[in-house]
Image (cartoon, helix red, strand yellow):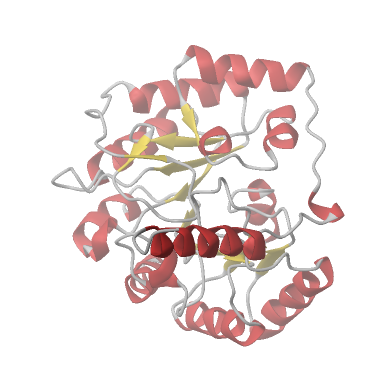
Length: 303
């Protein structure tokens, strides 16, 4: 082997070794049975007919079968392409298409057709737009209120780069729950989040709470955080007015994404729930398959 080839061979060996070491077999408690029923088929038909984007499918949510089977879905507005490239997220990234001015109406009409009691709306990040998508967000929530007055609304929003005046546009539509995810603990945040900042996210939560809305957030575990760091994030959220917290297992969408450091045992998730409730959260949903909008309608009834 020539001297020029040696460094290359060494690099390939190290890369293969890294992949072997970081691949962790998925435990039994994370194996999911995805079934379909008539309600699942009808929900899919409505989503497809109205050309809607859902985080259920783009995010490869493990609860898609269960939620769609119940006729619920989390609608993703602003298109299917995100301007950010977070290392944990399966949503497409790149240059988005122009906003669809008919999207607010399409989403509201779909909620009508699905006869939803509780609707969850989220979006891609639109850092390409002057207002970062705030006006489109506000228009969507207002249209849902107009067409579906009996439906409660939960909005899972981006950080709008910390611009308070843009966030206020969404706050002023008064959704029943306004959520913004921290995603992970402070130390790991810069390793896996693109553009987003831990303290900016706390600022978003604080503004939501100070405006009298029910503030909610979520984190993933299994990225290499410690229980002490999870508790620190709980404390940070509580100090900024967060009332509802979701904690779920990080699942690596593909080999290109950030590797899973650990599959957290269900017993630890139970401990996180008990700790969070003892600290003062009104609701803590904590479990391997918990996602931001999983059982979202129950959060409004409980709180």
